[in-house]
Image (cartoon, rainbow, N blue to C red; front, side, top):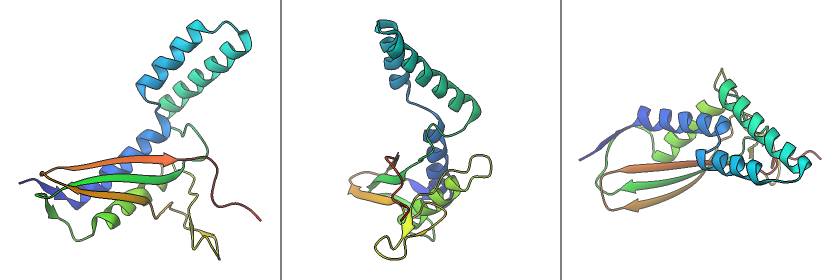
Length: 158
């Protein structure tokens, strides 16, 4: 039986969010490089080159690819036979990981989430709560995938 420790979940979520803030996936980089080689238009070729240069700068400097570092969405698949060494719920662990990632002293990410979006619209300052999709599945593994969906801050000005 697999034992999942609270601190491991929290740190894994925080590390994953930091990672996706400054690295493009290898398949994206490869596709952009191939598009650059095929492109005939000088203006389009320049635009692709700038994307690749920016991507490299973000990866080397560990700085966000985009200013809007997104609304965190988490997909968790929890094995039915998993044993927990934790005092927090899985949602609380995930949100603590989000909190740590967005307030990391070496790469503070832009928090966009507001509490009570219908009325006060006050920024939570740590990008919590995350949107969490949880599925209980057979087995003894915990699988967590994180995404930071940008597209403009939902904390709009009036």
